Picture 1: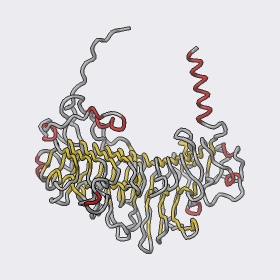
Picture 2: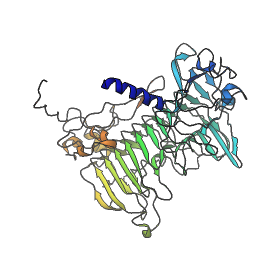
Picture 3: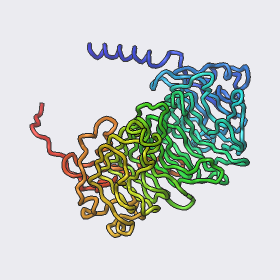
Length: 530
């Protein structure tokens, strides 16, 4: 009887979760026809030609007049290409929750060609600036029409975006412009080969929002943003986007420039670049940007791999991590930051000016746990350094179980905080001394311990198992070292199988726990067969 009641309740709940009118619609640029009815478009044999958001959708057609609603799914045919005349894609519809979104995606059984590949949005190296509103211009490929509507709870999945181009300064320039949207998910995208021509102008790959709703909950996950094949010296980066998960970034100027509450987890970032056309004074691997006026917020940065890595990256002046804003609490653990072209992590990013600002202007607290750092640049820089003197007084800074290679020392004596917890850590004074102990850049996982006699293993780290709940559950394993990319340009996660840290006893120092150095769990007792 209980199971019957449960099934009735379950089916009633599902009726509320997904509207009965939600449907799946198919889009094919080659064989599609926008004049087909919405019922016909629910079949792969009679698809529409365009998404409703595309500027090229046939005026007055069923495809142009249908209003997407929560639960709808729009499937783009694999292997097909939508060229520059189809863009921008102006999105202006809402899902209602994380389980009741509007989704633009693919079907691996429906494609053109010998095998399935992503559908392609191709800007064809042609800038497409347009007047967005009186006095406001934009050059974007996908954007939320935030001046006229909201665009919450929408997912865009498994699309290759190439050939995006810009030429002159516009009010907004981005491949994906998420201002006005909350809880957007951009997943499994492959964004590459962009270009710039003409006057000096900044542009972004992902662009969030500095005011309003702060692009709250907007996520880029399991995707690739790769500037290694960009045309010329266009560069480009991400700005004001809050959440990045299990993604791969290379050859871009701004990696993770977050706004307010943020999550940066399981990503790989290679070759921070800086081109002469950019207005930014320097590129950044990670930089947090605070609210005005001050609003309490938290950032979580874990299990990422950052490296200048290989040929092609200029990295001039690139910030390793620049964090700390009024009201900000920051947690950074299990990250590997190696071969940095710029200095070590820096506090404070943005507080106030002068002593009168103390103590309200600084971040609330900053916690660095079990990270590995190597910077090839300044021997005078500390592993965690004071940034802007007089910007504000932290309540607490914790720097525990970190492995620092090179630099002037572990803790900058100028750090401004009420409470500083700065031990245990391990400092290799030079990369030469680290190499002598077996920590090298030639390892599969750079600067990892190689034996039970490695100093980050023999030096007793603090056991933080009591913290491994909720947002910090992954603290009880070591680094996953970001992601890798396969030959089909999809991310492979994780790059490395994590090793569990011991529940009792000392942890290893740094982002790595030596495999086999963990304590086996205690055997269960008092077991009985029922």
